Amino acid sequence: MPAVYSMLVSLLDVAGHASSSLRFIRDSPETVWALASLSLFIDTFVYMLTVSMLPEILQDSMGAPESANGVVTAMFGVGAVLGCFVSGILSDRIRERRGLQMISSLIYSVSGIVFYFARHYYQILLFRLIDGIASGVACTLLYASIGDVYPANLLAFKVAIVYFCNNIAYTIGPICGQRLFDMAGVKGPAALVIALGLLKLVALFVFSNDSLAIRSAVRSRAYVSAADDSTFSKSHESVASMSIPRLLMQPPVIISTLSIVTSIGIQCMLEGLVPLHLVDKLNHDQDNGITFVILGLVFTIMVPIVGKATDSLIEWRGETMRYYAMMFGAAATVCSVLLMALANSYAVMMVGYAFFAVADLCMFIPAQSAYGDFVNGANTDSMARGYSISVFAWALGAISLPPIGTALYLRFGFSRPSIAIAAIP
Image (cartoon, rainbow, N blue to C red; front, side, top):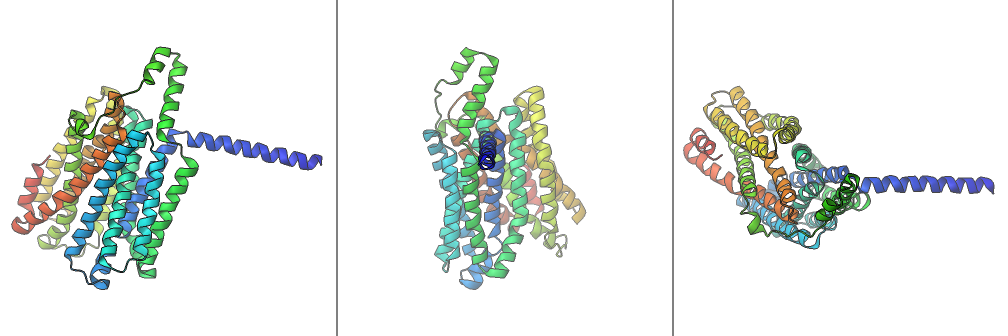
């Protein structure tokens, strides 16, 4: 009996230690950051997982015209815009992040189920719409959660690492999707989409507390340690929320929104134009995707560097340095696109494209972190609304500018539209 009693006591000690460790993990800002990175990885991976196979499914299996591909992409954009605005407004109103993120995880799995049983064109449209809704909710709330728990001089690096995970998913997603499709048809990628949605759900349920609760606890500990009762009381006063139209009237939000629309729009536009130009004018028709591998490597390597540099500048000279960083990114984008327009060889073209990747990050990373800093600085309860604007800006740039660039290319070639693009920033 003493041996049994000792074993039970040991098991209870282990369980208590495990419970204490799990509580520490659930209440840590670093956990919010890690799960936000996982969330964006899953979001991008799910999207890219199905990109390479959709033309084969639509044209070969369903007999849909090639124009149907654009409609499918547009449905994702519609879903993303719907998801980001609804989740942004609702999350700020009910003061809840984690529960809505768990719902977005289930929506991913639902989209996977629709894709698993898809046999007709309208089912593919429904799949992309549902996937877009899940993406809009997830992206809005993952950035809002980071903004909840980190101050201005740490925010850019945290956002940069999240975006780093996005780049990895962007690179490996199409490869994994095509392999699964070759092995098991539509059911292979669809099953993985379902599994990833459930994985995110379990991770959020087990390891995460709500970021707003963590924010409150972190601020309370900081104020108690400072023994500043007046500041502590002030921090717990109710704060007014801003509507989305009112947020859009604030200069930091306007500047950041325009910066994201510009950076993402030009990036997506060049993703469509560069391969055409390489074949049509530079006679580089044996690329095998190496151009985008190079671009992806530059993005992956530079994104944490740009994030850390932005935080260091803000810590050194204050919040205005964020906007100087965006200005530098805009000027560098102009120079890089002009270099690409004047390039007469593949090597010079790739130097310009790599330079563009760095310039693009200098516009995007400071802008993406600016929403959280503005909301925290204004002491307003509108973090999710702010990041819903960010997600909308991303979708607007990705959807609106590429068709314009393609039309200009077909009429004028690469150089003159590129010079016109350089005037946008």
